[in-house]
Image (cartoon, rainbow, N blue to C red; front, side):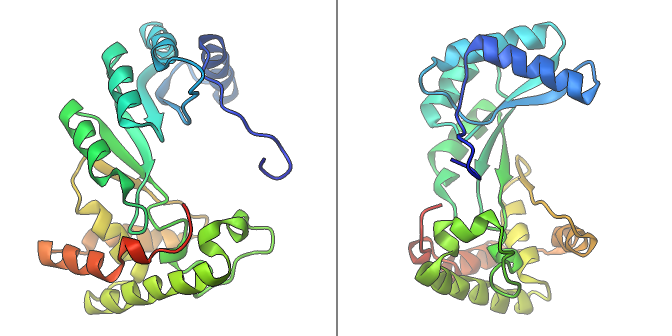
Length: 230
């Protein structure tokens, strides 16, 4: 349930094609560069979903296929049907579940990793810490932004901000720089509606970190100190 609307996942071949055709029409384009299955429908074999996406590639309606929030098994099975170009996963200082199996598999198969919420859904950008959440913000219902969890997680921001001062940058810049130093195949997608935040994001490219710096950052923002489910 999201804002009173029931949200589901559907990965049938018919629905995949219908959604693609509708997107092409809305965008008024002849093809889509990268087309994702944003959540996996576990009631439909992933092979069936990817087979239809493969047909759309062959028809020139999409160029590349992506998956989001997929397991190691799903990625492997999908890639066997048609090469997967990108896997989008939540990845940030406080969400590092992909670092072992998924990262290794993607690198073995030559799949790029697209990291969404690279600033911890905004916490490392100062949301709910240096600026309050709007009353209608969905994050107000997120476990990590509620009550005692939020108060504990604010300490993680403080530790990161202290390290950022050492590197002559801001906390969000250090959080992004940390992620950018995990390989050229890892592409973070921070979002913003403010120009000043865009300047901050671009500035993260100038932050240089050593292996020792990366370890220091991880030691400051420890996963076992994160409070609340993601």
